Length: 476
Image 1 (cartoon, rainbow, N blue to C red):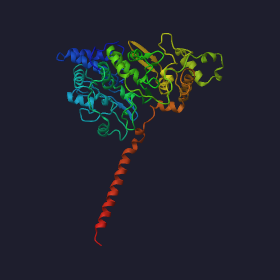
Image 2 (cartoon, rainbow, N blue to C red):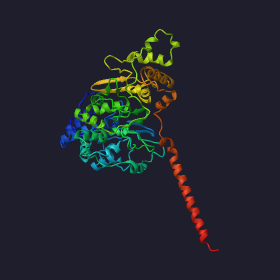
Image 3 (cartoon, rainbow, N blue to C red):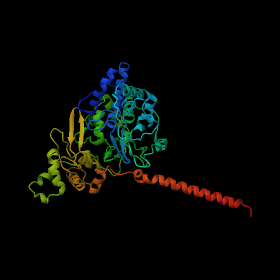
Image 4 (cartoon, rainbow, N blue to C red):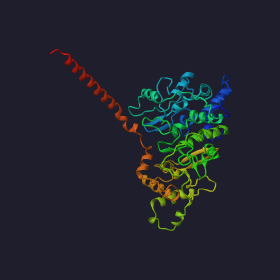
């Protein structure tokens, strides 16, 4: 889950955001009628809002041309083309249509967007920032005349008009206004984190209708295969034991030794967005996050980055016949120890992180540890590519079965992490398939039949009541 005016993001050409800057720069220069300052502001806002991460397909997709498959419990939702193409993009959008799409979730053709596009957060954007974003996307982004794959969700979720009801219940269209009780820095951080950066979209738990739960902002949520953790200032369940410098470093680099390393969606956010924000803006986000209401999970007793220590377990097993080793120990020795070290201390330069005092191995749920084993870690920050291969099906390193992943995960937890957590092969299978399905996804196929059945029952009752009334009024 960032935004706003300031310096234009510049970074290494190997990174996604730098590629976007290179892609859009020449077009902006060629448009002599564009207000350079306004377009520059819009570019920075687009980076802060992390538009490129979702609207650029992986593996060489053209910037903002869409096609990124956003995994949701209801199925894959493909991002749209938001280049100024008049054929496949938003080239025919007026500014009011652009604003409606960004803040209200309504496309130029009147169809509703799904809230995988975080318009529930963007609804807070000011008119001035919408104007700057519109200038950037229409005047400085190169058009791409290629339509991305269509989103095809199962019935009844493929009926986009149903979003009208959802929006009426859950969309708050109130624009952001500074809180006079807060400092200017905290207000700016709130705007960056909640309106532009849409941190709440991932880090706030959702109800049965997939809407954010009020009163639990930033309290942690399941995000498909991954867990977006509690980032409130609670010292046990949240990040209250992190210093402001720790938080700043994490947003800037995705790596805080002895605490956490960014992977999955958070790695994408740092790679495409956070690393390019000004230091002042990052400090503002930190100031805001540190003063939101703290939320505690009663079942947690220690911070997730406080578990584990150096272990000599792997060294003590050297020379033992492989057949006598546990499956988890064999996999750790063969696939993990070379990089993370047999003692779990990681590499000396910190490129490979330590396995103890690590939020992935100390969390109350093992989802992020399992996800990292399956999908690996891949982020480019400051020109440095941080990479760990995944071990899912198709891995060029080693394909691990569900039981293999559970065994090595349990070995790592027993040696370096939260020993109270246990992983089963069934847990791995669920996460490999995209994570647990929420209630709405499980009952989706029954929604329309249930409505029809209810309507039939109501109609039948009405008919019976009408006929009964006629008999009563009929003269003897």
